[in-house]
Image 1: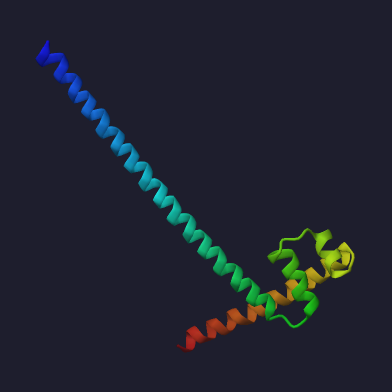
Image 2: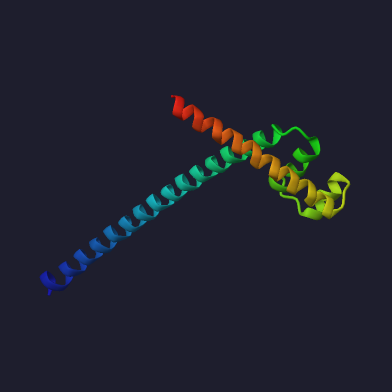
Length: 121
């Protein structure tokens, strides 16, 4: 009895403790990986946001810059953004539609300039 059951119990107890340690280590590694992933995402989003703000600031018309900033950067509702600009919701959307066309044109020029640079380089 002493050699059979009690030894088995000690081995089982050791296996359980080792298993708990492994589970804890695995959970810690998973948490650290998750933290690193979240940090990378935050850094990427921050960089994208700064690029967006820089692009908005490059636009000529102050009302257009304000419309984009309110709607996309500050994430105001259309009604709130219109009120902040002192215009109706419909007028706000007209500004937004116009500025998005202007922005697409600016991005198109930037993209074609980039492609020209690649061909020349």
